[in-house]
Image 1: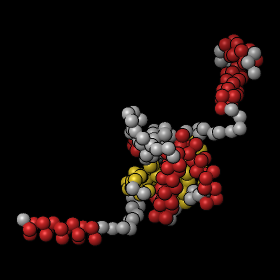
Image 2: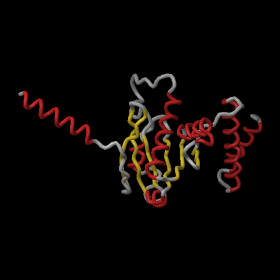
Image 3: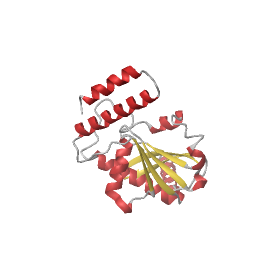
Image 4: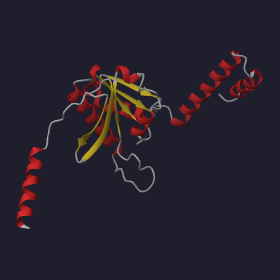
Length: 213
């Protein structure tokens, strides 16, 4: 028994001392790894043209929408389009898969999200020697804008893209939402009338809008 414990201890020691601290870059078209932030491991999947030295860091909506599923089903069809020219890094925000039940994020979850995002961006830039382009959708677009405000010129990405992102302004949210929706409806009515589609109905819409500025 003593010999068994001794051998197990030696094996554990060797395993610990032989572990690699450096990251080995995988230039395959698809690779998976974790980026560490404190005691938390952030899952990252990199897929596409890594030889381009241009990585689009995709920031998902939600918050905590399942990005790996999004990438796997290839909803936006990037696999045979965008990923031909760029590599895209898909990462999972904290809390992914925990929309239901009692899951605590803490008081500063938005700040934590931004820190995680910065860690992932910095790691990708250093490990792959690549230009980083941050692209956020919906909540992820808002997070991208928050990142830009916080880091400014010291941010890792060289370019930013916000897709359908919520943006705060000095105008109250309720008023701004109404202005956007009213303008959208007005423009849609004009467009449909120009196409001679349900003209009578869309004219009724315009009359309704005239009474509600």
